[in-house]
Length: 151
Image 1 (spheres, helix red, strand yellow):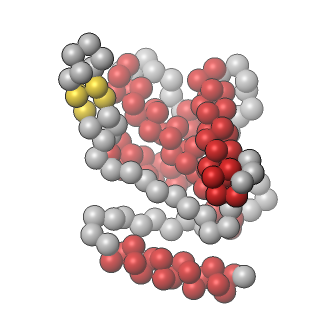
Image 2: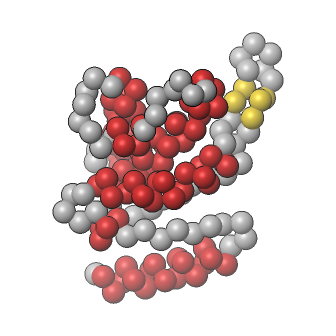
């Protein structure tokens, strides 16, 4: 019920806000994206983009195993009652992280707007299609782990 979800959310928020070095960002996916307007997640991703960039990514040179860069943080998402919503947000967050990685590795010539590309249904964009398929598979594996069935 909504009341139980509110109680659980309040307890969770209190614990997380008391934790050192943890930033909490509340986002009501169900309310904001009501009516299947999933691209309404994009402003949240844009807001979190500087944090994603600051966390960086792990990069090791294959030739000499020299570590060039380490990742310094993670973003955790969860939905009280829907793994698909959680996976959708993680898909968008990972797309933004991929954009930051490509800029760092390739420079200005890398693909832009991968996050927005996920909203389109253009199957000609290979990077976006592969990214979508990877995260659908990821969602199915997580769902199997928690529920015993694909999402």
